[in-house]
Image 1 (spheres, one colour):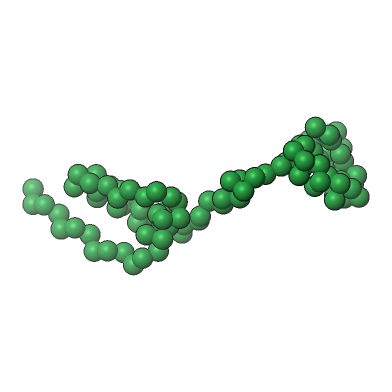
Image 2 (cartoon, one colour):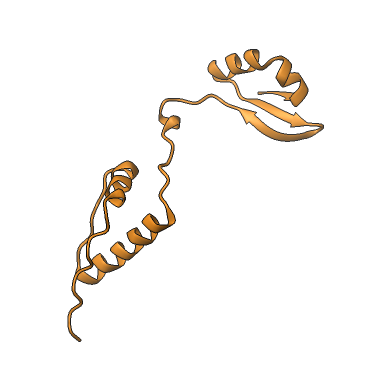
Length: 99
């Protein structure tokens, strides 16, 4: 691991990226304080979490609560599959059982 000031890193960015490509961690410093890092990543690291809207998240939590009450759950193999499911228009809720 090597450490560089931001000023040094700007001047040597290509070299630092190449170091990360070879598997080396590079720490960036502001004065004497460590503030960031340039680190190697793999294809697996590039899977970025899919974002859902507040409305979609609320629907998901409501659906989970409804399914728990009715004894079933929808299962997804990936976050992308769950997000696609939530992008579909909301389904009418199941009728409530009389008390």
